[in-house]
Amino acid sequence: LAADGLSAADGLRGTSETLTTARAGALNERGPLSARAQRFLDDLEATSSAAARAVGGFEDIHLRVAGECVRLQFAAPALVPIIAPALSHLGEACPDPKGLTVRLWDSESTGTTMSRAPWDQDHPLAYGTVPELSGDGLWTSVQWRTDVLSVYDARRHRAFVWVSSANRLSHYEGIVPLRSLLAVWLRDRGIVLAHAAAIGTPAKCVLVVGKNGSGKSSSALACLGAGLRMLADDYCAIGPGAEPTAYSLFGTAGAHADTLARMPFLMQIARAEQRPHDRKSLLFLDRRKLLSHAPVKGVLIPHLTAGTDTVIRPATASEALATLAPSTLMQLPEASQATLSRLAAIVRSVPCHHLDAGQDPARLAGAIRSLVSA
Amino acid sequence: MRSGSAVSGQYFKVAGPEVVHETADGETIIVNLETGSYYDLNHSGAVIFNALVTGAGAEDALAEVCLRYQVDRVTVAADAEGLLRSLIDEQLIVPVEAPADGADSYGTRSQNGEGAATLAAGEPETPAYAAPAMGKYTDMQELLLLDPVHEFDELGWPRTA
Image 1 (cartoon, one colour):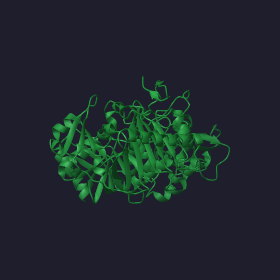
Image 2 (cartoon, chains in turn blue, brown; image 1 turned 180 degrees about the vertical axis):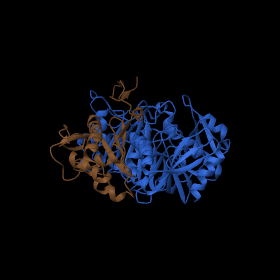
Image 3 (cartoon, helix red, strand yellow; image 1 turned 90 degrees about the vertical axis):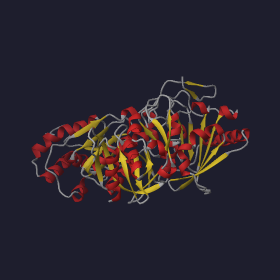
């Protein structure tokens, strides 16, 4: 999915100065909020309420994300068709007062004005975590290029997402919406957002790990033609515990033209969109082809081969960790030693395999299905 | 690392919270979250690194390798000198006056406690000795997007030029 106009890291990176601060794991510390931070949150609450009044109220969408309740409160209808489709498979009435409430709005369509940015304009502003307004249970980020503001207030289980205009949102926000915000919120719950595809059945799934272009997506998509269901194309939430559970976040996948040509069945189970500047087509997968969660029972490291046959052979946990960890860590806000240790625990807990992925999708899917069914 | 080497009598710690590390199957991966570079250490390199960051001095770390692989001290010292230099030059470890209570002072010991002392117990068998080695990879640096030059609007919000 990252082979598009925007990098997979969009919105997550800051300057090196801010990264060190942001990665120190301050979110879990719960000291008193500064007066400036409290005023900032109060302003966001008031501004988002004003935006909702301007458009006749909030439009609520309830989701169950990694077992937890999330309420998206749209104060700007213009944002709904961008943000909601990739999350629609998680839709579920879920009235938990301790769940996360996310308020989303833009200034243009609501005719509202955003409060003044409360950080030092002379400081090299991080496209990523804003250090002055992060820590002590607060996380603030301004997204690279689109200037989307994301704020997570752990104390009150609330988050805010604002952009000056819905037109500024990149198509990336439609593929993996709210990714960095959800990653930070999930981290508070002991859940890591791994850079991995996941495919399987309700009883068992395998993670497919590797950097962009390694064959994660094509391997996972091939399996949709063989009776398996997808949890993730690129980013998979993985829960805590000795027997990890994978959770689906985004019901989207990316597919190159040659993948669509080799796997024509995809056009029957997905709505495809070709976006400008994107070498991949964006697929919105049929909900029936998606899984909300499944126990993780293996890790696959794909290697694309020129032959037709697919071979699965043993890999070590260290090989799996070296494949999974760097790209996961570099794309996560608030990544830390604990994140790497969690990834290590996951790969140690299940068998790991190399997947020499051949060109025949049916054989590729058959090999993975045999592994999942074993 | 010959006797009398500049690092032979020193203690070290992990350079900072931006340097994270884990050991699986006896091999260690180190990631510098600030630079995007990551590294892998082979089995003997992992023994040395884990010994150092859990409080052993450089001499004791080498002794651990000698004991583990039944290799003579002179060979190990010569083989390990490059690794020690690389770990320092890459700013993954920094020298300290004295060990910090048997653990690195950033509390970055692997959560499963897999360190120098437990590697042997966790391994079915020690592989044949190979000189300590570290690989460096920079292909994730593309994910580190630096702050671009941009303008601010009248309310101070960034406005991409």
